[in-house]
Image (cartoon, rainbow, N blue to C red):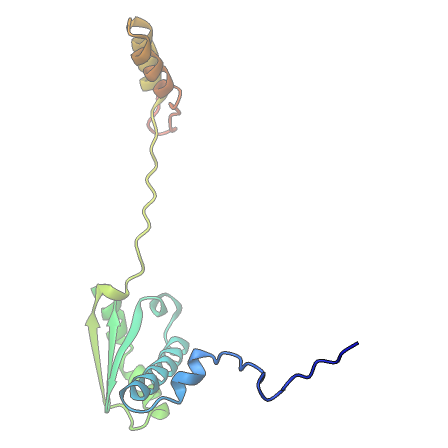
Length: 165
């Protein structure tokens, strides 16, 4: 049996891919500044969420921090008004944890941060309409149209407030 010699130096262990977040933290220049600013805004957002009452939390987002001015966005004028009532509390609490201390708080209304609207459309066909479609299907000579009307009539199911038989 012949032994095969392997040059181990030639076959170095492949390095595992680095995680993107660890690589980005080490970046310098404009990219590093953006990452650093994003991280600080994320920390401020976390602090803000601990400070605000529950319904307001989901409608407010920190937009920017420029020096001693914090800019917040509310997704509607109603939530912006609620946020303005909390202005002094936010400034005093956030000033303790930021460097330099915050002196100004700007509140804007921006629908960009609004949660998407989910509308439920309840479609129904009252029983009387289904009955009328069935009668019409019986009176029609065209078999295809009659079958289509019967299928449509099969979808009738009234609601208690709108279906009065």
